[in-house]
Length: 238
Image (tube, rainbow, N blue to C red; front, top):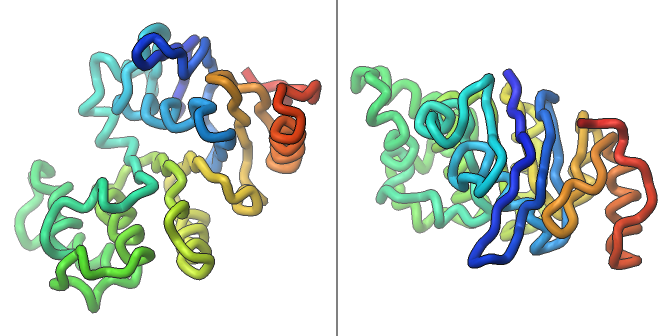
């Protein structure tokens, strides 16, 4: 299974945020880093059709997000930085179950899957609690569980630890590392990328480096210190 971006460009109100981005995303763990406003969040949203490019294409195994967004979203889950943007139901169990409403599963099967994902992610004792009473870390774990219960093949996470303290950040990061799914992680926590297969560095709407984590972090650090793209190589990626 492969996500492919082909010369993707996008603008908001005439302001370019993605500029001719091409990449093939097939590795198990892929990081995306860049300053605020670099285009990384828009790039992430193109991967499951939340944002459709103005030009170019985003494909999942040949399926185009313009024509097959619903099918792609069943396979590519998305976790936002603010869990409040995802939690839509009153209780924890209801919020996890909502993603299975159109799954065709029987009620007993839905309940079993909900209970399993709550247990796996340490939320069982909060099953019938109001979601808004959870701590920040628990809400983010709930947002993650509500996506994982649908069993996506890819998980795109847009800075999921931004609003969390160090302890809860570590819990979320450990959870993401242990998932069987392909993970595309946007983060400002550079240490998190250790052991990843690949990291993209974005600047002014372009991928300016694509390679191993250590080299990517070095490139990004130099970029932030100089304010312009450093001369490091792109790592040989398409």
